[in-house]
Length: 106
Picture 1 (spheres, one colour):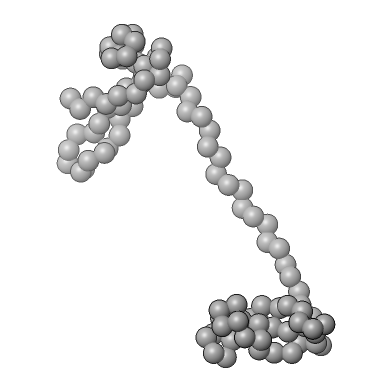
Picture 2 (picture 1 turned 45 degrees about the vertical axis):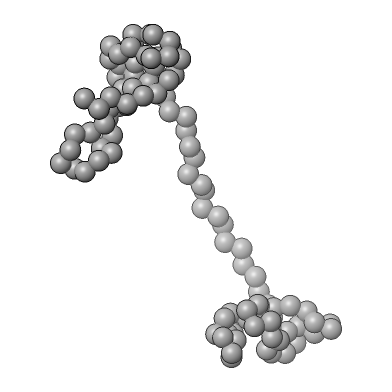
C-alpha cells in the first residue's frame, strides 16, 4: 500500500496511456509508475444485514381500552421508558381491530 506524498491519502491504481500508475483521488496527482507491480484486489464478503421482521401482535398482552377510531374495546399494549429513568414508563396501545396506536400516560 502506498500513500500520497502531498496529503497522505491511499494511492489508487489506474491505467494511464497504457501504463499502470498510482494516483491520489484527493489531489488528483499521478504519483508512481508501477509497471512491474502487481495490483491485487480482494473483495470482502459483506456481513448480512439485520432483517426487520414484522411485529407479531399475537405475542403482546391485551387489555380493556376503547379505541378512539373504531370504538373497539380490546387493545394490545407494551411499555417503553420514553422519559427519564425516575419517571414512569409510557404505555402504548394498539387496537386489535383497526391497528390504531395511541399512548396512555396514566
